[in-house]
Length: 486
Image (cartoon, rainbow, N blue to C red; front, side, top):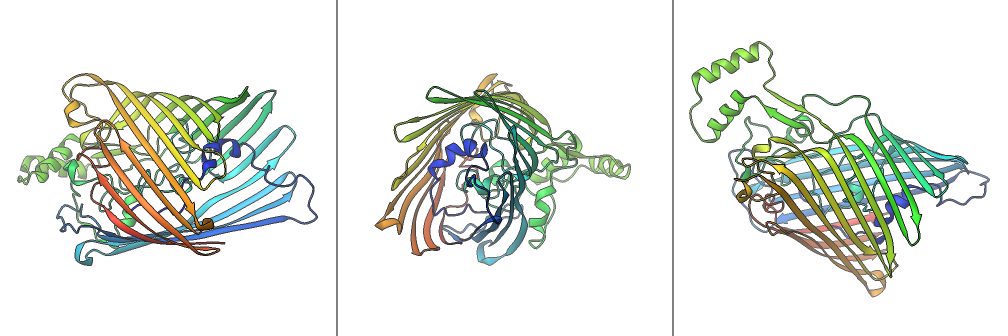
């Protein structure tokens, strides 16, 4: 699926999302209202894209879309029932459609779902929020290593969607308390929700041509979108759910903090039976299946044996954070350590490795016609074996020696507003340093009325086949969009 055109750059207050999350009722007046105070907000965004080049249809189920579109809508009601009680209910909808070359295999899907829907209870000692919510851990609003309690929607990529589209609300209970100079945030998310992603047949799917894995069975376009969410999993986690604790404090001119998260990973670890894996490899090479191998698999299927598993591992994350103002800019730093985290090797084999992640972000912190955000993310994965390869993290040439895998990513967004706010021009992009893969998305938007904006944009990807952006390098395109707001 294509990533959507953003008519607005990342707002400068994104880096302060954690602080805003910590005080959910502060936006309301403290005086007791005579009647409930109600606020309503909503928007509709429509985007259509056309590829700059039409590739022919593939026989392995990995063909690209050459035209597609998507839309998002939200409608939220925010009610202050009393000085100590607040209710938020939001409905969301996501729809998309696309077709391959010659408008073949046209498909579409419409998904209504519950957005943020929670009750806030504000007391003298603790603030409590229960319900569907987006949780904020860490200083950086998008890439903080401890911010793993909410699942993500990767169907439009990682970099180009707006943060509120990328992070999906999850049911949780959150408590917020201040003790002296320290602010404590505790979270329990008892019910598991996986990431949203596509396995095949979409432009951001996990299976792409460079991997050398095709779809082992034919799938009709009309049912493909509904098969994707649960295709790889065989078991979901139960209780105790996800747990998180965060402590922050203002120290001089800085805000410092630390956090611990014990959570289920939101992508499954998929392990194929060796005999099934051998059969699939032979099919991909165009070789006839071994009769004895087929017979063995048939007998095992009759006996009820599982030929693959897709389970969700758990991980601990320990993280430290800091944020401060430097002139007109907000500076954020996050560092996180996980003693065991799932990475994926070639052919998507799961590998459990320790990892260290660090994030440095700079963003505009004052109101201005120029709005910018730049984030550098680094990753170190020690103890990578000589015959192992971390997919999309390191190049194929890294194989052959034991090593510490390193990954560096720069993500930037800049926007400038002209003509009294009617015209917006911007550029969003990312550069992965080790393999020199990149994406660029220039855009221009025009506000035709108070609540109506239109825009044009382009998306350009480049890099080696196994690089983060080269792996998905099938979708350079031009996009048009419309945005309506309440």
